Image (tube, rainbow, N blue to C red):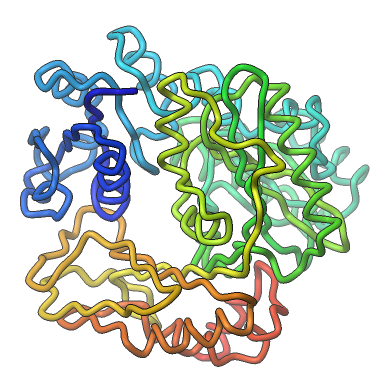
Length: 447
C-alpha cells in the first residue's frame, strides 16, 4: 500500500479522496492555487503545497509543479480526481518516469479512449455495441455525404478529440450537412487544437446510460452496474441515478457482462466508465472516461463499495477486492449536482457563502468542500457540492430527495437548488419518463 498520496485536484473531489486516504491510513498531500489557500481539503490534509496563481494552466494543470510537489513531500502516488489532469496521458507517463504511481489507467489506455475515433474502433473490437457511423475521421464533404446517406439522416458530427458538446452538430438533411460539417470542424479546431470530426447516426430520444467498470490490469474486470445520466443541459449532466428507471434486470446484466469482459480483455487497470446512448432496447457506445466520475457516489450507495478505496487498492497492486458475484445492488440512489449558478440563467455566481447548512438523516449524503464564510473563486468549475440520497426503492428515494432539498440551505450566492426542487415535483421525473433532450425542453418552457 502507498505511504503518501498527493491529491492533484481541488474542491469536493479533493476532499472525497482525502477522506478515503485517511480511512486507509495513508498520509495525504494536497496541492492548491493561491485562490484555494482556505479550502477545506487544504485545511484537513497532512501537508499542502501551493503550486501557483489562480489560473488552472498555472496551477492545477502545471505538471512540472505537481511533480515537484511529489518530490518535495515524498509522495509515492498521485490521485488526479476528475477533470484537470485526470485523463492526461502525458501526465501519467511523466509520473511513471519519476517512479510515482498514477492512480488510474496506463497512459496508453488514456490515449486510446481519449481519441473518440480510436475509442470507437477499440469498443467495436471488444464486442461493445457502437452507434452506426464513419470508421474514422471524415476527410471532406463528399465522404460525409456518402456516410450520411448510408446510415440515414439525421446524423451528428462530433469532434474526435472533443467532449462537452463542443464540435458537435446535427444535420437532418443533406442540405444541412455542409454547414454542420464546417461548423463542427471549426469549433473542434478552436477548442481542442484538432479539427478531425466523425459522423454517427443521430438518435432522436435516447437516454444516456453509463456502466461503472473496474479492471485490475491483469485480465480481470467487473462492473458495478449502470447510472442513468439523461437529465442534461448543453451536454452537461445535472441529475444522475442508479439504477436506471429504463432498464430491466436482464438488460442490466447483459450490458454489464459485455462491459466487464471488454475491460478484462483490454487489460485495463482502475476505474472507468463506458457510456452509451440507449434507445428502443439497444445500447450504442459513445465514449469511455478513464477516471472516476462526478456521479460515482450513486454507485457507492447501491453497492456499498467505496470506489476510491478500490482505485487505490488496484493502483497499489492489490487487485480487485470483489468478484462479480460479490457485487449486489441494493435500492435506488439519486445525485443532484449543486452549482454556484443562477437556477434559471445558469450564470455563474461566485462570492461568499454566508450560511451553509446541509441536510442529514438516513440515506442522505452531501459531498462538498465549502462552508459558511467560504468565498467561491471565479476561476473554476461552479460545482460546490453533490446531494446524494438512497432509498429502498425509487419512490422512497424521491421522497427522501424532496425532504433533503427542503433542508439544504446556501445563502450569499445563487445556486441550482431551486431547479432540483422543481424537478423533484415533476410528473415525468417521478415516472422516470425522460431522455437526454427532456431538461432543455423543460427549461425552454419555463423561460
